[in-house]
Amino acid sequence: MSYQHKSLAAGRWKQLSFIEQMANIGSEVERALNWQAKHNPAYTQQAFERSLELIDLTMDNLKGFPRLKELARLREAIVDYFFGENQFKFTDKSLRGYFLNFIFAARRNH
Image 1: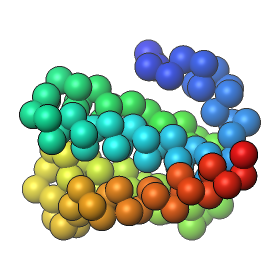
Image 2: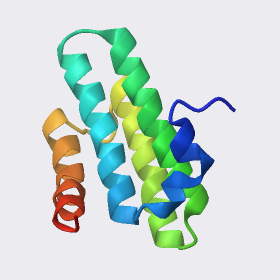
Image 3: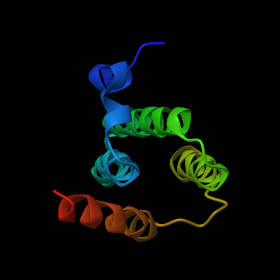
């Protein structure tokens, strides 16, 4: 598999806390939303793919079922939001809000 986040996939991702991982996923989702608002489908797609890559790296590290279940559902919802019918009824605001607490917590811990 070819990773866009090569250093993270090589093991650095495992060194981050779950909160830091979620904050980084949120940053990629934020980029995808921003590019979508600017009507740039190529950059939207790239940021979207990076967010999925980070979700997959996080899921590979998880041992607890509740977090794994939440991430699997999050992955499904993000795919549906950007390229499906948005059956989960997410909005830009709700996606940003979901990740905002992780971003604040990650910053507070540093």
